[in-house]
Length: 81
Image (cartoon, rainbow, N blue to C red; front, side, top):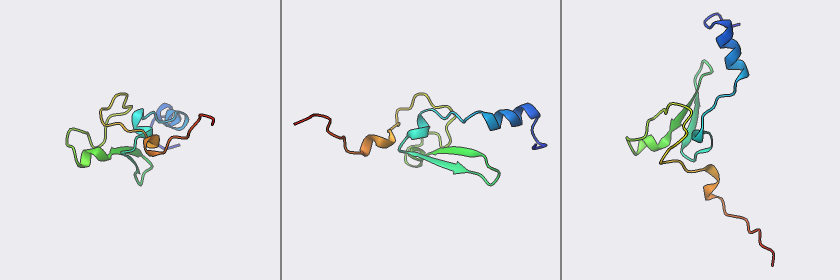
C-alpha cells in the first residue's frame, strides 16, 4: 500500500474508473500520464483558443468545442439497393 494516501483513498483510486465525461472521446483531447502514474487530459483547443482551459476540471459534461472522435469517419450506408 502507498503510505502517502489513506487506505480508503488508495482503495478507491484502484477500484473506480476515472470519469472524464466528453473529453474521453473528443478529437481534441491528449491523454497525459505523469512519471508517478497520474493521468491528465489536455484540451488541445486551448493551444489556439485561450477560452478553453488547458486541463479542464473533470468530468466535462458540456463543452462548446467538443467534436467526437468518429465524426471524421465516413458514414456507412445502411440502405439496401
